[in-house]
Image (cartoon, rainbow over all chains, first blue to last red):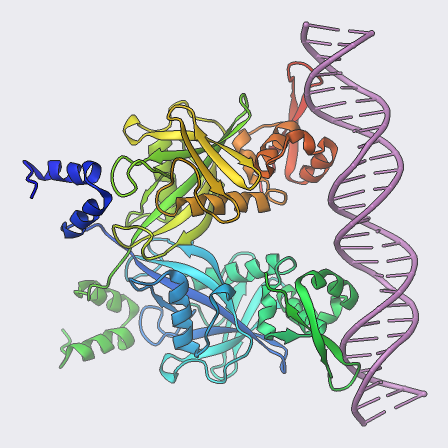
Length: 272
Length: 272
DNA sequence: GAAATAGTGTCTTTAAGACATTATATA
DNA sequence: TATATAATGTCTTAAAGACACTATTTC
């Protein structure tokens, strides 16, 4: 075994002279100076759409402990040692809604790192956006109080409302402020607005939002989803022009009776 | 002072009954279960453009220790307890190039979190993109061996070359593989490609890349920068059409003789 | 047939692109 | 005046949008 006259010489030897394998073996045996490290979490903006009620939905979880007791928060949680953040997002989403999300349907939004964004300490969060095709009947176990909120854009505000709990949260689209009677925990208002703007900007060229409609959907259903993000009536989106623009991203897969009226053709998002 | 019959009861009291201030005071006194926490770093894709040589430049630092000894890496470093990642990026960039970057000229790209992306342990990195208007004569202190690489797009490859060290790195734009004689450390090839694609996709609608030209620049200079990212000659970008499209984002601020030929008008990026 | 819903076709306006012309400098 | 460089103008083509019309269903 090699011997060294000083710790510094040993370090220099392994870092620059030894093989990489030898270096890594040595490195793992060292007691490292304890740097301050942050906790890392993910937060997921999880959306779905209810065709029957024509409502866009966002999942929120009510906090029953400090900090932000009684505020609403995005589903999320701590990243584990062996996970990429995408995997954390999928795991947490499954744990809280029972819904499995394909990794390709997950979009990373932004990493929020204000060192004081969590009053308990240093927590950095990576935010994600996911769409699911159906509203699960029960979102999460009862203890965590996960609820689907209806998301409505009106003027320069986003309204988040939940019938069960009578909760009502209002976000200002321009300033990012929370105005409603109820509140969002941490910087989750910022995350939700980031997600909303992300979708609204990109949907015309990458209409992944339509995943909220499930596998198959009609042009009119797609118009309804778009209208939610634009804060207008779906009738203000011209069927013909919309179809012309969207057809680039869709494949026709059949036809479906629509109750009264002419049956609608049904489409599917093209695989990218 | 309040007393509790069990630790659990105490926890429950502070989390749900006490005031938030009381909760936080209590929380900070607790010895917390040591969760595994990652180190968090930033990596900065720092670009500039040399008008004289018409070359796009990217800053890389050669590693002289394991792991990835002798490979080239993006400038970056560990996030400190009191910093947002943007601040870390600005600090590290200043330390390594002497250049101060305005926070508004920093764009967050993506957070890379593969738990095994660093052979030494768990390191999550937040990547940034920054443009600086001038190529500093000396990039960083000598010990860290920071060098400006010329970035050239040819066919489906990106060539990174440095004259001093004769280093040459080739990246495949389609697969993301590193092909050249020299190599990039960690997943930095992926980060550079993310940055390159980010710029190329967005420059027509948000021409922040033009910050590499400094405050004031001509239409032709802007065409030359765009051409670098498209891998074509600037003459293949029609002056008239390009100006028509860009004028939306520019303000005319004067005129400048160009040596031979008609003087060019000079422009500045509109403040958003 | 009336009402409801969806799909198709046409015309207008606007933006994108190709290309030709004009303007201002230097040698 | 020739040449280099940059700016401007015109024409063509393609995309975006407004609007009218046709098709298929239920009551």
